[in-house]
Amino acid sequence: MNAAVTDKTFLIVAGQPKAGTTSIFDWIAQHPDVCASRTKETRFFLDADYPLPRSFGFDGTNLGDYAKLFEHPERRVMLEATPDYMFSPQFLKVVDLLPNARIVVLTRDPVDRVTSAYNFYSQRAKLPKGWSLDDYVSHMAATPVTADTPAPLRVLEQCRPHYLDRLRVCFGERLKVIEFQALRDRPAEVLAEICAFAGLPPITDITFDNRNKSRGVRYRSFARVFYSLRPRLVYLLQRLRLDRLIPLLRRAKNRFEAALSSDLEKTEVSEQTAAAIRAYLEPQP
Image (tube, helix red, strand yellow):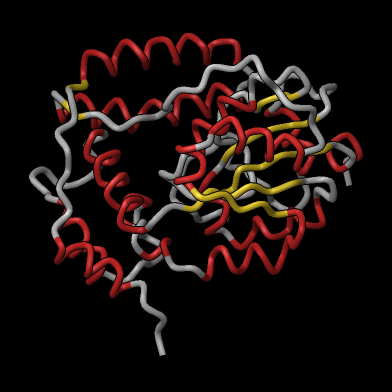
């Protein structure tokens, strides 16, 4: 074991996607006693075959590489947020690998979460052109998830409750679950709860805003290329220890998104689609 890693206190936001994880990460990262990971999602403990790019992945022997993803390891708490961790069995090893780790999971009503994912992936041109929310849900409900299923098409299946149940059993009191509604209605109170959970003093000088908000897309072909290449380039720079260039990419991303994006029209959820989502998630015999 690498003591430089195992002796540290980690606060890991492990789920759910499209439930406020970017906001939580950005807010807690402002705490003076917190060292946030160089990129929000390190993805270090994802299963090896999980369909998302990353710079380093845990292979059972390289825990020391995890420290390379944080810039100021001398601070009290290390923070990262990889919301797909809750779907990866390998993440359960963290209970022993990082004995001082605290895990946070944000949960959201599945109809709202699927709708938010639809808007998010449509913006990034990761869904077939012309797909409605009804098309998106119908496809996921009718298509079993396999090892080859891309992340955007796993959303409905990943709303099943057993993923959270598995974390509860594994981490026990080291897991804190927060409802998205509470985060939206009482952000300062929720942030104070998370700080106390991580052993941090409260933080008061902070600006609360909505991060990673979905928008419409103006040029699909450019968006598809941009959102496919950008994360791979970010993780490649990390692997090459060229992290100093990542802020330049972040600024370029903001400008590019401003040019690519348009106002997002409100996605109406039909009663039929909402019912289909809830029916899919009913406990199976």
